[in-house]
Image 1: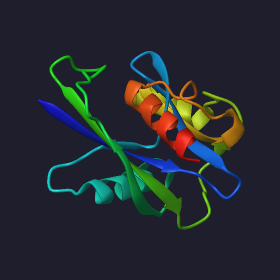
Image 2: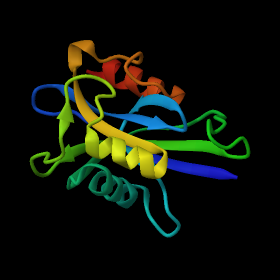
Image 3: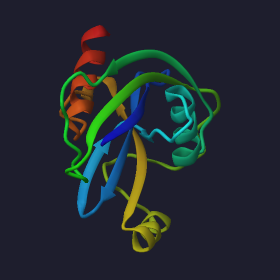
Image 4: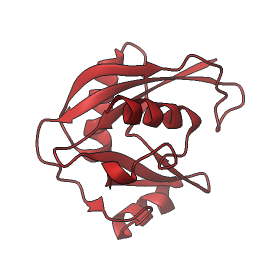
Length: 152
């Protein structure tokens, strides 16, 4: 079974990279914003939907960065192979969602979400000089972080 994921790399005018800090199934992850492709949806539309759902942000989807080209088993379901597609994303409006200054700094609302669903997330920008493949947790995200650092 294939699980197709679509992620966006949003770099603001201050050369900061947007990341999502998430607590899922008892583990902490720092990753790029995005999520699962739904049936009948294109990858770019998926990413627009995910940004709107996760951070209430309208984005323009830019150039393709990378698509997984190796076998990656899902960390959450051993019967799923992950295929991830990455694009640059550009904010079309000011970010209204609360942004954090440190990793996993969940507020009361986000902790309530965790109590209800077993998952929560928050967002923050990482300065370009501090951003690297070590910033993100997931193996495919690490490859993408390395690609964008080398290109810039």
